[in-house]
Image (cartoon, rainbow, N blue to C red; front, side):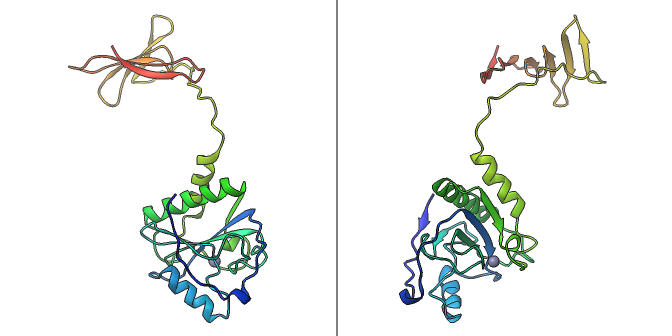
Length: 220
Ligand SMILES: [Zn+2]
């Protein structure tokens, strides 16, 4: 995780410490093009210590530090003393988020989540009456990607149910199945997890799985 130090100087008399993050709050800047330094200026103009968010992610996927993680934030009333605020460059009531920016936010959330053992991630509007981070911000997708990537790995299980017989798949010799594959090949199945594929002019490939987490494929 590459995090760029913005080296913003805060008005120290206005900065309070003691933030104990157990929540991540996601925001948009509400501006199509801006930098971490622009947001800092806007927030200083509000009379605040400096940028209210702990992180800023631009549209190129670059991640910048904002307010120190242990400083009380200024981004979401009610959450500022126990959260990390992440602001995305952009105006996501209207725009579509670039993939690199989305991925950077996911990576940053994963990093913060594991650092503080955080389980709660939400958009600003889930904590406070606001449109932020915008109806086009991929909130659920980001939450899903962060959660999926950090969920404990389950032992993979192959699908040992017999293939369903249909126009392309026919049972033969008791427990075996022929499949006319949609990619033009022929499949010979023991079940859905163990089978051999045949293609004209190519060696057969065997796909196997012992249902104990071991699986693979081998050209025969
Ligand atoms: Zn917000």
